[in-house]
Amino acid sequence: MASPQLPAVVEPARLTAALRKGGVLDAGAVREVKVLHQHPAMVSHVIRLGLRYVGESAGAPHSVILKMPHSVYAKTLANSGRQEVAFYTHLAPNMPPQIVPRCYDGHFDEENQAWHLLLEDLTDSHEIAADWPLPPSRDQAMAIVSALARWHASWWDHSGLGETVGTWASPDDSAKLMDTFASHYDRFADLLGDRLSEERRILYRRFIEKAELLLQRYHSHRHVTIAHGDAHIWNFLLPRSGVTDTVRIFDFDQWRINVPTNDLAYMMATQWYPERRQALERPLLNHYHQTLMQHGVAGYTRGTLDQDYRRSVLWHITKPVWQWSINIPPLIWWNNLERVFAAVDDLGCEELL
Picture 1: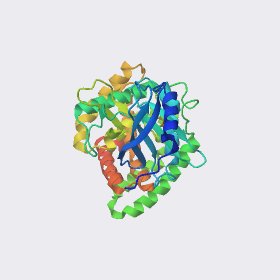
Picture 2: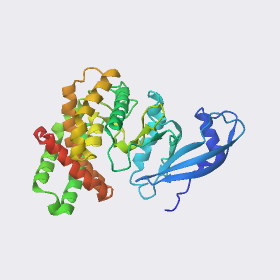
Picture 3: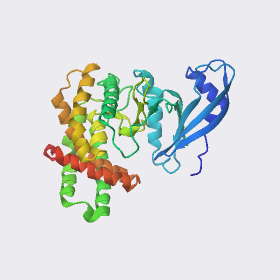
Picture 4: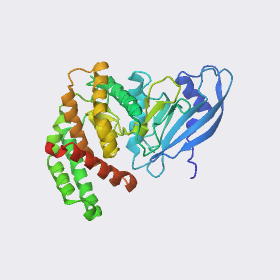
């Protein structure tokens, strides 16, 4: 794989300025920058950079993570880069510590839609729970859901939602989005032919017809938060054995104001096969709810969580179609399609229509 052209921000002088602004470098300066590793991410480049300094550099990072767009998806997913840079530069500084990696520098260029992030490197202290597509252990899943609940609680019904933090989709916006989805779905169904059963086609058609009713929960603007939008377990970093630290969440290119169970349903119903989901789903929902209460969320009952979760599972039948529409490989969307429909059947989500 050819190495991407690195942005100007990785030049020693620019890195020095970024690290000083981030409060981790005082008198010293970056002398040398070296590519240590390139992670083969799906839609972006994630590059680990090693740093060497001249002068006083005590406490300065010896490595950082550079994230930048993948050329194949740069134009298609430009808004994702804009979203993630906005998260790290505007939202993250106002969150409790040790939920997300520290950001030293981030910029989105509106003219050419280039962007970059310079992030804290947690490689030595943290790791993902398991190699994709393996699910986490029970203990790992509990730790991940704890982090997700802390994150959600920090923005729960926040006064800035829709004002200084994110934007609300209006009913007209939602209607236009569903029209776009319906158009994608028609082509998706044509492509699959008899690989999409008549039962599933009926469910999709009923879902599209009833979307306005289902969207009332979102448009209530109550018991909502900043949702991650891509909360599969491989977007969480767990402390390595022997390291005393917290789970960190990363990859925020799809964050938005939403019903919180959108993240839980994507993590479990869309990503896990039935046996694993059935074994962990109930304990994890219980643990999530308990953690919310411990971090100040009030008035959100366990029964409401169940109702929201089932509704969110149903919403995620849209996910494989959206993924297909932006040329995500079938290895991703086909398996998501099968898993989410298994969850819809298990949880009786069709009753919501």
